[in-house]
Length: 477
Image 1 (cartoon, rainbow, N blue to C red):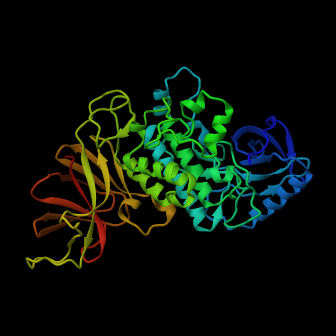
Image 2: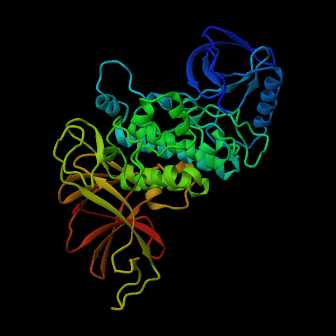
């Protein structure tokens, strides 16, 4: 059930923890279904103040906080309780992540006179939103992998790096955190983000209700409209919104039921990739009444990353947009520049050539085409990083965005690559079954010719006698 809303505590108020340390509340930085989070003036700390109805409820919350302190949160970007507050306040003290701001700042344009599109681009645009969503979903996937449930995901309790290029995510509400299957877990949720079965009281919070809330957040963040608040709900009575959140109305982009469509928000075709559209349909159509049909968080992370990889920056308005099917920037109509592709193929040393040539070759599909494991689009003069997630599948979760190579499309027939790793990389010229090897030293740059016919240069991320990925730079068809 949602918590009862009360007037926000005023900055300047002093709270005390059980050890007698006093803290002065400062700026409000987050607000969820159960309370508010404030910065404090004494050090890099924050205080979460919880709303509660009576002393029994306050005592239950204090016990929950003590239980959260015993959970294994090592390595997870979660503000776990550092100290519990003394009555009459109910809440806890936590460490505050530096350089972070509330996710809410990317969901609702301010009334400062700027157009929505100008604000959308200024707050990072499409690519930044995709990367930040990948980071957020990755944190929850790691948490769920430890058997933990967050309980109340909402924009008010997720922090993101304040700079436009930052992708870090940090969770500031830990008081609902619990082990999966805990029947005593609180069923509180932030209105608008509770899964239908949670709202109807048919289920307690679990990883599937977490996933539903994250799907709502993702859709809102990309489109600036709630997936269940169509024109009918927006202009109707409050009871319609309640029915929509209970799962009794179709979502606004339903494949067959158009009764709750929305004319508000960003054009979905501009910000939702085809793969993301499939995941949203599975989440809000199949998964609306069948939680087990909801996409896994790993699927979402992969889809956000893949979508970000095919965005380019418009040289005129600096907006980012999907390039594969666009002929012009959807934000300002600037013609799309000529592009190149970085295609990632799998090299297998065990493959033998019928011709009896050198051993090893790229893995192919049933139709004989080289199997592509990832795709990155390169636009003129824009430095694009080749990340660890593009070339390694067995990396720690916190190293997925480590840059290994920087690639720049200098002209239509050439790509400049720079080695950012701490070891030389192998360059191989493939001309039929004949291979010529070279290397890209640590910190070195080389200009690779790009051609759609004849010989091809591959940048290998392993030796030819090991299974690994290699990248081919080629013109975009």
